[in-house]
Amino acid sequence: MKRREFLGKSIAASVPALISGYAVKALNADSPLVQALMGTGTDTDHVLVIVQLSGGNDGLNMVIPISTYNLYNAARTNIAIPENSILRLNGYTNTGLHPSMTGLQTMYNENKLKVIQAVGYPEPNFSHFRATDIWMTASNSSQEAYTGWAGRYLNYEYPNFPNGYPNTSMKDPLAIQIGSTATLTTQGPSVNMAMSITSATNFYQLVNGTSDPVPATKAGKELSFVRTIAKQTQQYSSTIIAAANSVTQQNPYPTNNSLADQLKIVARLIKGGLKTRVYMVSFGGFDTHSLQTQTTDTTVGAHATLLGRVSDAIKAFQDDLVFLGVEDRVVGMTYSEFGRRIKSNSSVGTDHGAAAPLFVFGKAVQGGVLGDNPTIPTNANVNDNVPMQYDFRSIYATLLEKWFCLPKTTVTSLFPPAINTTLQDLPLIKDGTCKVPAPPSTSGSTVITNYPNPFTNKTTIEFTTEGGHTLIQILDTSGRLIANLLEKDYATAGKQTITFDASHLPNGIYYARFQNGTNQQVRPMMKVR
Image 1 (cartoon, helix red, strand yellow):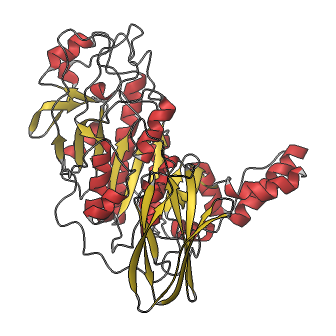
Image 2 (cartoon, rainbow, N blue to C red; image 1 turned 90 degrees about the vertical axis):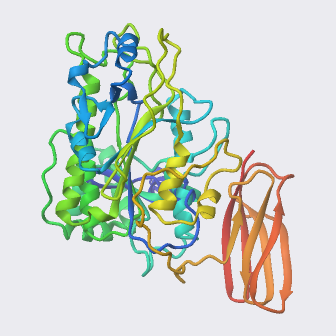
Image 3 (cartoon, helix red, strand yellow; image 1 turned 90 degrees about the horizontal axis):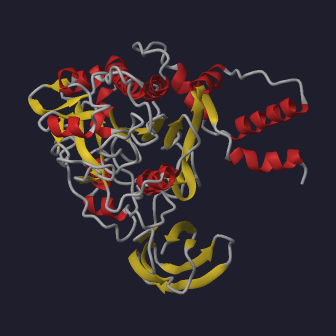
């Protein structure tokens, strides 16, 4: 195959659209985040903004224990924040914030910030890559999952994506990621359900119809061709451009802050009218094994700079949402793949650890601190970890139920089977936030589902027949017919169920193809170990 032919056939699926210099990727129904949220449409215009702090953020120097300060200081003699520098929280004396986080201190005092202590999961993994996968898929640490928690949700809301999309009911990207290619978070059973914007520069090039010049070389010609193919295949570009161009004024954002640049784009697109449910942004640099602070002043240094930029960016974003009149629609959350050890190391840094605090923010959030200060041993050693108080999947589940307004039974079905935790209903979102769910849209409506999905050996397939000849076939990803699971004439219309036993089949994706009269639909199902 010639290189140009290869590029033409393959690049369309992998090159993201660029807005304001950031890669924006439309997350598809295959995205794990999209797949993690599978079901029928809900009557809500709510938006979730996920802020990933890549590298493993040191939670003990971000949310600092005041009530046990002596133990904290003894464990971190070379990086501990001085007690008189800790930012105090109104009405809560046990805990404070890093002195660089004045923006989030203000949001807490305005009742727009929830601090959740010691978030993690059983049997933590300390690999950046594996730990990130666990957070994105909401799986156990010993469990492989190939779809993301947000992807499953989006697949529930917008069944059969990308078939029939965009349409009159949903003409916008289901999810948008800024700053990288689409992640596992938004991976669905068959496609990723997100659109990706690689950088802010790319965003503004998309909006303005410009691009960086290409060199006058053979490689430059190929780059020009790749851009052309990507632009031709980006079906959501026009809606993004229209939304961006409808907003001509925003509140100020800090400069030299890549997270602020990303969040500024998110606010603009939300105000511009996109129905996009999930936005993801990322900010790296938190792998602080050494020189986390300055030796002469622990309140400044690499980690302080990172935390200050996070705080300033989120505060500017919240102020902009107020300015734009869309504050009621948006809730955000931060997370990092793991925390750091209790005891600092001899390199003026911290090593990979377990649980850490995270923030949920927005007008609809129940402000305050959830949980107690972490337990710190009297003589902490280099192997001591912050013990988990809250499982991160309970935070996801609460947001799905209380912010995206899904029934509790549906929320449970969106998590991998046999997760080793009980999903808690946490006090994160104010009461009365959700409306009564509306009936599902006829566009892309579901006539065949299965539960659980993913599954281990067996799954129950539920389908709605209009009566008459009804066929359900099982196919593999190569299109090979595995079985005619059901072929029957029904005298009346209604819902029916049948069990698919895949215990003899290898792990992977299978498709249940439903046919009834002129109706047909394909349901992706995932078998895992």
